[in-house]
Length: 119
Image (cartoon, rainbow, N blue to C red; front, top):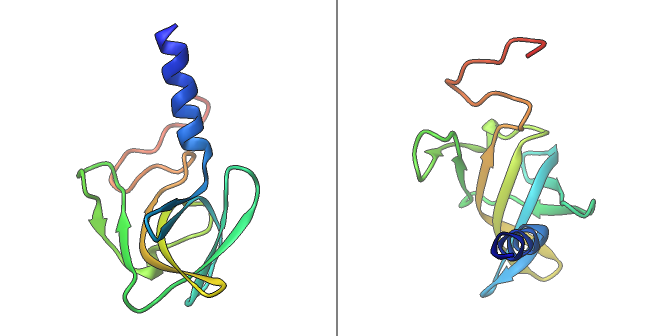
């Protein structure tokens, strides 16, 4: 019973693709489009959310090697990566303060061996 309650709670927590955190908004999902000035994220419920990138945006690659991830840059973003974006609403736009991203589940992380085909 406790496992079921915990699983339900976790499912509800992770099901919220876009939610408020103070005056910030968190956008989680998969990168659908990457431009020099914005990204489009497909959320768990299938919605596409556009987030503007700023010169002050911080990029963190979650490589699994360190708790805090590895500092990165906008040019490391690619379609298909999983992201969590902390953004500030400004009029009708969301402006990214921080973009944390990881390799897609089907892609090995940097430095990890690729799985052989057929296994």
